[in-house]
Length: 565
Image (cartoon, rainbow, N blue to C red):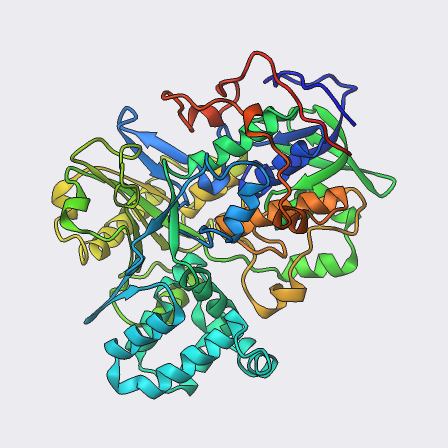
């Protein structure tokens, strides 16, 4: 089936126009799904409630656009040749447009606990050697612990893997480390980066943490040249140059179900849009409870939603300094812990309290990108400092729904808490950058309420449903649903959370809609986009402007490649 593209528009579509697919949510998963569908001949409409596409990969600018900060693009694994990221981008001809920069192979993340500084390397063997060097008196326990995690995560010694998976994989990671006799310090170093999924170790299956470590240990960590917004900008370009449309400020209020089948969506302003397939890349919980509605759920799904826990939300502080941290050799990525009691921090937050001392992940975009020009001018640096905080509205003194415009930004108690946590985060950051307050020229904080408001996620969670055994592996939500015509994408599906996983999962969801194995096709060499059909990149290309409606630089005439539906 060959069709001619029509130019994207910002306004409402014709009332009687039917799309092949409507995608709800323009995060990396929704955009990747939309891009693969458009590249395979489907008429696709992507709807985003925010004014910028990209979800947690988007950026924002402050101080007259002097400084740029990544919302959630800190470091990504499996981005080298043959990795999942490159594979997913290959099918869309984007590997030259989204370039991934390898972060310090000698140690992509610096871990700091009291008395110990550890550089997380590439490779399980090197990882083990460094752990033994850091804790020589615990060599036997470390070797046993790492061997079991490696077997579970990397599938090495396959004959033994089922035994280890059953005995240790489903048990908490703390149980394994205790059984191996590891000290609190050794455990803290192994667990230090678990803020990347914000879930307490005593409730985290060993298979989950081992798989997380393997994600980075197998080939290192990466960062996109030019910042996270390049991801959303280029995925959007694939959609719009192949006959699709992306609309922002278009909040979906309901997924329309008729005769048991998904047939389209209704927006908050009452506009109805019909489609042969609907893909929800929105929050898993809200997709079912709010967009679909209880009357269309199975009894089993109702039970699951009632008991469903989300990962803990983040508290972030964005800072600009009047010094180039690259000149000091400051690591581009670090996790700093004031004490070695990792579970203790989580127990405080789970109890609805903010710890007096807060662990902090430190990300420095100016150090991650050699050119360093997109985030700060010469002589300056930007930092993204992330921790986690209580999710409850009552803790933040917020009444009402932030996504519905509930006022909270000027509430005295809210502002007081925000300032308290900001200072605690800066206290921890000082352990690595002692003069951070003296060199600080900009500072702004984001709370779980901020995350909930802008991304419309349950509890302000960044990583979706909690990584409990009942939510992993065969128990993870599938991209297909019990409602014909309704599909899922995003971090709470079978493909897991994180930028790499949601992009990979977006390709998988598109394959489900098409009834094809796109992953196998791409691995066999299929490329569905001719790069010549994409918008030419000029010196003035701005990913942020290209991620807003009406700002994408569009070609006067477009060609839509032939595709078989």
